[in-house]
Amino acid sequence: MILSIESSCDDSSIAITEISSAKLLFHAKISQELEHSNYGGVVPEIASRLHAQALPKILLEAKNFLNHSFSFIKAIGVTTQPGLNITLIEGLAMAKALSLSLNIPLISINHLKGHIYSLFINQPQAIFPLTVLLVSGGHTLIIEAKDASHMSIVATSMDDSFGESFDKVAKMLSLGYPGGPIVEKYASYCAPYSVYDFPIPLKNSKKLAFSFSGLKNAVRLAIIKENATDTITDEFRAKICAGFQKTACNHLLMQLKKYFKNKKDNHDDIKNFCIVGGGSANIYLREQVAALCNAFDIQLLLSPLEFCSDNAAMIGRAAIVKYIQKDFANPLTLQASPKSDANEFLSL
Ligand code: KG4
Ligand code: ZN
Image (cartoon, rainbow, N blue to C red; front, side, top):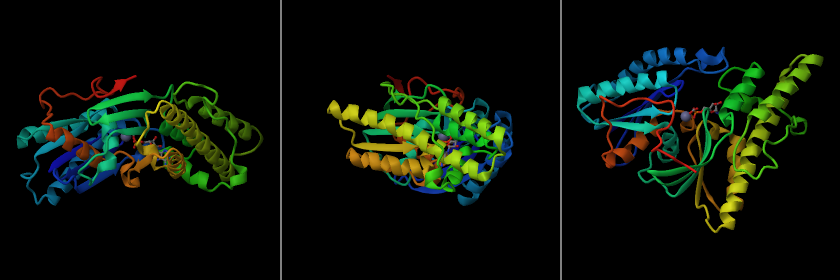
């Protein structure tokens, strides 16, 4: 079994995964959404202190699950990058202490690769080649993954990420944090005919890239305009959320369509495509991407909703690959890093 730890942002999580079957045996997570809600985003210092409280609590739960014996644990997997340095360190310190005291290997996991492996929790075989749309709070990327160790980033955001733009829109509408689920909920209250109309970013650009700052600004201006003549009502919030969600997702879809078409024209067909990361829990996005993949005859893989946002189960699943390769880290020198290691992904 592998014990894995995730603390890259505002979720403290520990999982135990069986190595040969990839079966998830134990998984617990404590989220800090309430604590950050007043700030409209994650406050790193608060997040770090909360991890210091939550991780030992979850470890105790894991220990109880193991009948107070770590003897079946063969390695410790831990997220080391990318993320908030001072929160990553909390998980890393615990992982190092466990690795040294139990005398078992330590495995360093890239959080973005972890998200990709959220697709294969409970599945011993991963599927490659795989093209990935990763939409999280920190990233909006298209990744071409030939296999577990050959991954290239082929498109990225020029400014904000997909998830971050949901968080900012929720903050502008005083809806709390995290924005994704709240904006999605408000959007569902809006009647189809009254959805606010926003221009789709990069509509006429040939470039394969993402951008959300212009859309965020358009939302800001719409709110200012409404505020000047009227007070902000829930009905208005629903209209804005529905319009924003539709436009942000349609922007992703337009870029994906461009990318799929280009691949097809070059006879470089995509077989397997997936959306991962917190934003992949968005139902409108899942449905629209499913229809697009269907039109291009591409198989779409999606994680169960509970594993879209940050969790240690995906870190444990990714750690199995490195365990089999005996790709271990030195507990005396392993460091956390806010950015991905250059060896993890090739940037085109
Ligand atoms: O992957 P994740 O849990 O953490 C990072 O690695 O950043 O992603 C969190 C992000 C947040 O910005 C959150 O607002 C967004 O994912 N998110 C969503 C939805 N659920 C979470 N965005 C859109 N629709 C959702 N349903
Ligand atoms: Zn994440």
